[in-house]
Image (cartoon, rainbow, N blue to C red; front, side, top):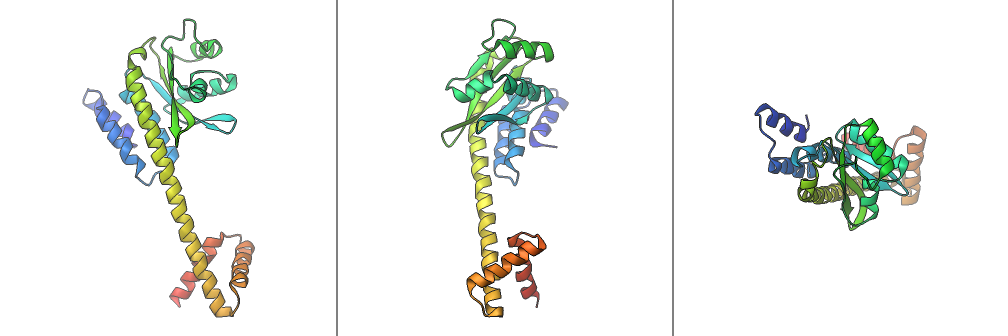
Length: 242
């Protein structure tokens, strides 16, 4: 069970709402845990309805080139709304990503800024209110946090706390992004060191140049259809055991 789910279950069992500070603490712990970015995005979406009054569903939409994708969602309702918004190319999330201000529509039943999306939501989901806040990583607008309510105007009084949560989500996403990049870099450095060791072993054993040794290693990798780093690791382990 995830950290956010555990907090939700505990609150329900004791008949009281989950403490926001406990949810934020659990999310902060995730950033430095050995989890991938997708898992952290998922926990952010699961946590939003726990700490934002009036929020029943949440999603995180990211911009990848010229298109948008749903990186995570609290449930299928939020995911379906994202799909509709992407198909219509209009809605609070799209506007939140491309513009500076948060996008808020407390009651989609009345003169919505996004009439086509509002009509689809009202017909196909229980959602009656929506708002979106941009997500920023390294000063780049990379996506938006979408919040949906099944109760008209339930989100209107929660804009401030939603803005705080969105800011936390940006910080969390940024930290997770850099943490994943750092882990990838460390893995790459480790692989390069192993390849360097393997090249050195081949040079010494076969009395060849470093280029010739590397070509031998690469040919073995291609012939066996195994990653170069794995071939290097096997070679090092073989010589270590002899």
